Structure formats: structure tokens, C-alpha cells
Image (tube, rainbow, N blue to C red; front, side):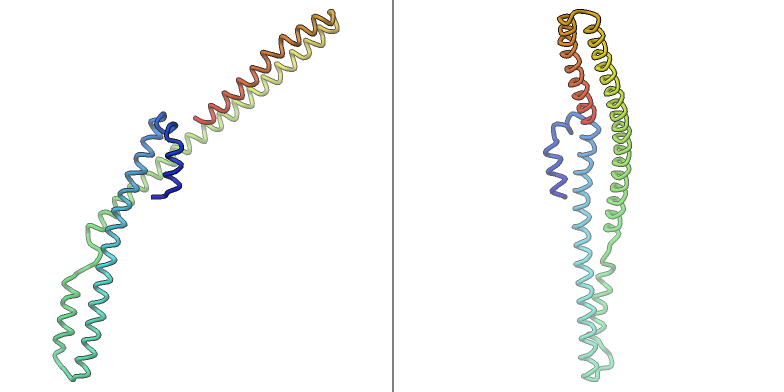
Length: 190
């Protein structure tokens, strides 16, 4: 199992538990990892059997050379080793191929789910970027309107009225900018 992936998952566990779809995806990742480990164990067994088969062939060749040097014509020891090789059979059993196919299908399904999740997140990110641009434009337009109104009020009215208007409008406009920015960050996290 990839240690970096596990580390990231553990760091983000609160976010993962909040989102059911993401939680199921992580759960499936761990299941797939366990089945991949089972596949690796089965592969290791098959490779050991293949190595044992290779050793039997090497012993049979050695027996053949010894029997040839001795002038034997029946090659009984060589045939005995070859029969042992034949008795072992194919090192890659049907069980191995079933496990392989199962792991392969699960990995394909996981890839499809990840691609679907990525597509959803890409759409959401695109929406967030657009929403942020619109809110920034509205914020700038509102700020400009308040500024223009302040200048007009200052020109038409007494300076104390303009100062009071500017002070009163700066607080909600500044707060609105911070609120819009925090909403954008929150949406980005989802």
C-alpha cells in the first residue's frame, strides 16, 4: 500500500468522513489494496513454483549429461526428473488467473470512479471560479458606486456628511469583500 496515500488520507480524515461519496471511495481503495496484496502473494507462489520447475529441468539436464558420460541408453534418472517436472504442472494456476482478473476488474472500476469524481470536481471548480469572478465584479462595482456617491455627496453637501457616509459605507463593503472571499474558499474545499 502506498504510504504517501495513506498519510494524505489520514491527514484529511475529517473531510473524508463528512463526504459519504469520498468515504466510500477511500474504503474501496483500501479493499482494492488488500486484494492487490492477495494477488501479489499468489504471484509470488506461482513464481516460486516456476523456479522449482526450472530447478527440476536443470537437474534433469545434469542427469542426462551424467548418464550420457556413463554410456547409459535408458536415461532413467533423466526421465524421472522430467516426470517430476511434468507432475508439478503449470506454475500459473487457474486460481492465479482468477485473482488476476478480479484485481484487474476492480482496478478498472476504481479508475472509472476516480475519473467520474475528477469530472465532478472539475465542473465544481469551474463553477467556483466563475462565481468568484462574478462576485468580485459585483464587489468592485458596489465599491465604485459607493465611492462615486461619496464624492458626489461631498461635492453637494457639507464635508461632515461625506465623511460620515464614507465611514458608514466602508465597514459593510469591507466585510462583504471578506465574506465573499471566505465563501469562495469554502466552495473550493468542497
